Length: 348
Image 1 (spheres, rainbow, N blue to C red):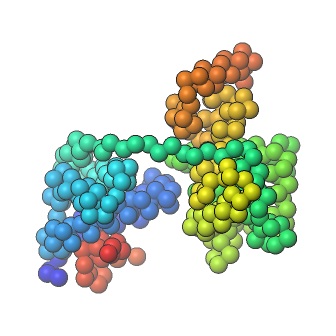
Image 2: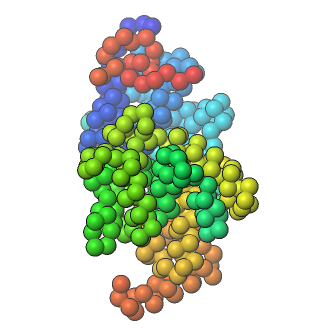
Image 3: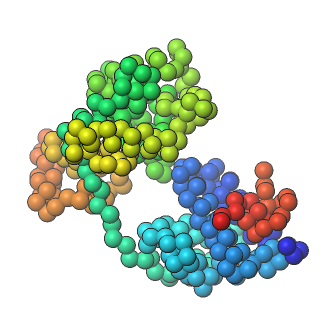
């Protein structure tokens, strides 16, 4: 690799600061969001290095212009077979970085403007396959409660369904967020954008969680422990989404044998969607559902549940009724590739 120029060091520093300081400490983005940002930038760096033959000697801010970003998006779509939705997410991550860059040096403001003119690709929103109450019951009957793993998984599934929380919200849950001894037991959920919402727990969920805590946590439990922790990492290590996904698919395959309404290849988001749908079926008004899901507005909930015109009228009618009731910097060391210059993993 040729000698790295000063502009390359400066850009690498900004990338490192954005990913490891700004997004985490100042913006407070979730680990999932930060990972998406990191993946997008890593892919962009890989594109520059492998396709454009860019290295530390010619790495510069001009490579962030709309021409390079558009070529990168085309490369993602054709060479890596990324979907339109994935390409749009990568573009959003790049725009986020450019906004940060402009806060550091106003001379790069034009890059934001250029990136904002790049059109998003048209994508067809995938409809989430729901689960009936019968299917949920079948799934809950599968974990073997004679084993520790079975008891843990059942408690986890009951909590997921009871709260309709996002998977990262569930796995990020810590003991100090549980308030099981309150007159009305509840849990505080830290959602997207660090928005806090309170979700009350029904007796069945409280019973399962109490039994789970008694068996899997010391007495008293460490308030900073993850409720559903990784067995390999211990109380302060979060269970991975990959591990949960594996368990869900295993149980779904078994449950499908007794109830065909259980989707094969079940994923965590379908449980959240199922609970939201069941709330609607039970007559809960759409604003309440929107709050419980942590959505910013009611329209998002309408789209999320794929509500028909007839259902929308019914949902809004329940709302009217309710209203009447009044309710280490790697870029400095061992520079061998463009990715390592920026402190990012190499992508093959």
